[in-house]
Amino acid sequence: MSATVSDYLLHRLTQWGIRRIYGYPGDGINGILGALGRTSEFQFVQVRHEEMAAFAACSHAKFTGEVGVCLATSGPGAIHLLNGLYDAKLDHQPVVAIIGQQSRSALGGNYQQEVDLPVLFKDVASEYVTQVTKPSAVRHAIDRAVRIAQFERTVTCVIIPNDVQELEYRKPAQKHGTLHSGVGYSAPRVIPQERDLRRAADVLNAGKKVSILIGAGAMKAADEVVEVAELLGAGVAKALLGKAALPDDLPFVTGSIGLLGTKPSWDMMMGCDTLLMVGTSFPYSEFLPPEGQARGVQVDLDGRMLSIRYPMEVGLVGDSQETLRLLIPMLQRKPDRSWREQVEKSIRQWWKVSEAQAMNSADPINPQRVFWELSPRLPDGAILTADSGSGTNWYARDVKLRKGMMASLSGNLATMGCGVPYAIGAKFAFPERPVLALVGDGAMQMNGNAELITVAKYWREWKDPRFIVLVLNNRDLNQVTWEQRVLAGDPKNPATQTLPDFPYARYAESLGLQGIRVDRPEQLAGAWDEAMSARRPVVLEAYVDPDVPPLPPHITLEQARNFAESLAGGDVDAGGVVRQSIKGMVDRLLPHKE
Image 1: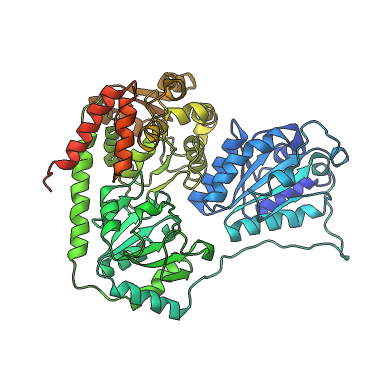
Image 2 (image 1 turned 90 degrees about the vertical axis):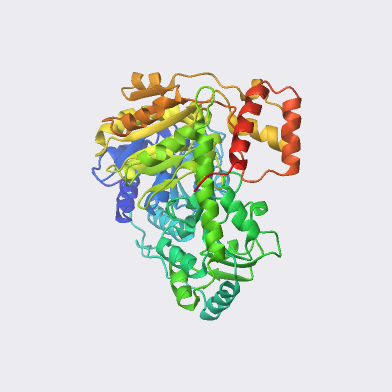
């Protein structure tokens, strides 16, 4: 049998080192599905929804640095991919989407499921989207899609009509108007000019109170960031995507920054005279030093991202690790360590406050305690994924990552529903490592419950069966509820905010997984220990109090006024909110011994 276009498509992907595709079947990709059945070189992971395929492909890219690939049928299947692909695009991850289309003869005829896919994907795959119309064109289409995804760290898209998929593959003819592409890509060494490095060093050496902010772009530069921080006597804050870039047990790491951040990060930014940003596009300027207070140096691989969050005196285009290595010999060790000591004292005090807040009573469980109890029980080499919601606050502030762990979430898109498919992508990439998804009940009802079926389908293939989904069951779209109170001054609206109370642990058991439900704080430690030692995937359902406030590190007068107005406006949970808010604020005001 001659190789079809679909057979060659898979063969070409293997030449690029790709061996796994996430997707969901449909008749618009029948040819590709048939080719998958004829090869043993590919693993097709069948998720419950195409959006989950894109999330899992993005997760693969985030945790491995390799290209993630997702597959969808024409029309509705292609449309379903979009949210997950935007997640990859906004977090600068290399993902290739392969999509079916109606037969060429039907295009433009208002045929069933016909969607103008090149136009639809032109934004999310802005660097490269193409529709294959001849068998010989599939070669350069795949080569360009993979190479551009790697080079630009972005999403690309290849659309293949279903009749083309089943045609016999023919290599490009040696004639005018044909392309003869090849396989292979090696990332370049990108470093700044020496004169710019010296300018940056002069700024950093002159500073007396240096703050460092790192993101996902610093993930491979941990040792260099530590050395720079030691030389400059600086503290280091982490954007959420960079949470795993440095361990949280380092005494000068202030933790996360922003609305979900820590007080030490806020205090450090408000008190510094020099700011060094490395590999981050952290967007919230109100949590950076006031303009004019600090001199700035920024390192980023993408020159377009320089000096758009804070006006930088020196912008360095380069790889974070390489750039810092070149910068380090130019830096002078600061003999005055008073700024560093101030930062470290603030961090020690913060952890005491956090512990006190986590141990506050609640009805029935304080959600912060769920995460506080998790940290010391995290296995070495664990991979964590977090969803978007109030639980993200506790993940950002209370989970202490150690060296060798990995973690991620939807950063710039901040989409709900990514936590479980992210964890699935991580588990397939690293089947020998324990994986945890930290998910709220809103995200679990949106996507997570369905993807537990995927977990049930595949978990026996994983070398280490530890796959734990924490569900914070607070019966509330809690993050939005708190944002309405604090940002808009509106009381909770049960019609929009209250969620059905779903039995997550029992549902997991119905799928053949293990379910653990806790509704008393003294059960938490044992529940985590049981989950970590389980021999099959676990859903740990924590029945938590929605009234515990995810207090930001700094509350403005306007936010305080809005909060008071929301409670005075007849908030249905006002009593519990007031009680829990007072407990949290008292813990911040009380002195805590180091």
